[in-house]
Image (cartoon, rainbow over all chains, first blue to last red):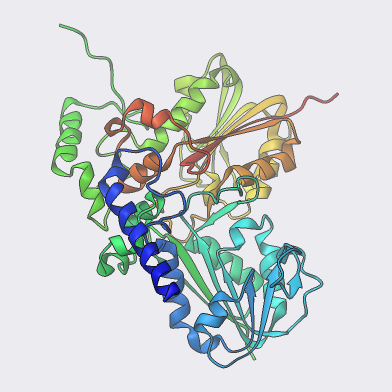
Length: 232
Length: 243
């Protein structure tokens, strides 16, 4: 009962935000309609694509799975997960089973995971190449890295000094070619100009028709997803 | 009757009256608000067919504010557009391009492997919207530092938000932030010699992606800068004189 009430209030609050600050305002204000990527209006658009990607790859989220900061997507999309590991650079994270900087993760075990879910993290790592080398090292033969990176996004509040990169299909291809030699790497660009401008404006996924969200335009990536499989 | 000031587009080509009419027609036929409903941009050329691309507004503003540094021996990429337009007391113009077919190029080299260019060669290096096409950005910045004379200035701009250039799907690598610019340039130029500024805000970025031109926004909207929503970053880096 209580959960229902909370959910109801939450939905009402989101609807209110959409009514008080309607979409067209985005073309007249220099500030976005939401300061948290539209999460106060509905689902942030990047999450729509991230979840679509992970949903399509459910079958590889199995065995021993590593995720960053928490095991949210492992819990949600995993099938046959035997072991959950959480990596964080922040030692105060009680959920972290491995405390390490991904770019210098020598303490993390080698060939230990069947799947590594690395969503929206590499933009905070200055030395992306090193982070990917460690990601490759931590995977078992036959293990899969499921990675997403932003191409268009506002800077995370509080990360002005440590949010470094936005990526493109070309950089993803090159980075993974270097760090995952001989692996099966698939890079895909998600989103289009409407999704990208809406995301910047703080408009939520629910405010756009599904068919508009699902039209991918390589010239206007919002996020890029990479599936990299280490050969057996 | 008032004489009309010569009007040029951002690459310096003169604009005929018919061009101006065509731009206005495009703005009327595809009004701004259409951007809320279309999954294709209003312009396929960053708004250049409607007016001045929004990023050019910031690039020109930055270079204009740093005119004083564009002097002596100046290096620019691809053409000497900004050297000619904004330079003061330019003694020598160098044009660097990776493409040997460019007739204007005085130096043909890849900036990441520009060992052929001698050290301490230039007083100013204008490097606008180029580093996104360079995979090994750190090497490029090292060379930029190396070829500047002591006391020389690098004026650099990089995108933080932009569409991918048509035809460059496999050659356009990066979008930057203030944090990456600071780290990248301080690695070569040293702390205290680099100033990074974020230009633009959410509206400017949205307009730029959608292909809306600078003229379609108000000056005060363009001039508001929001660190959390940079459209591009400008970097002024000075090569320290030997003590």
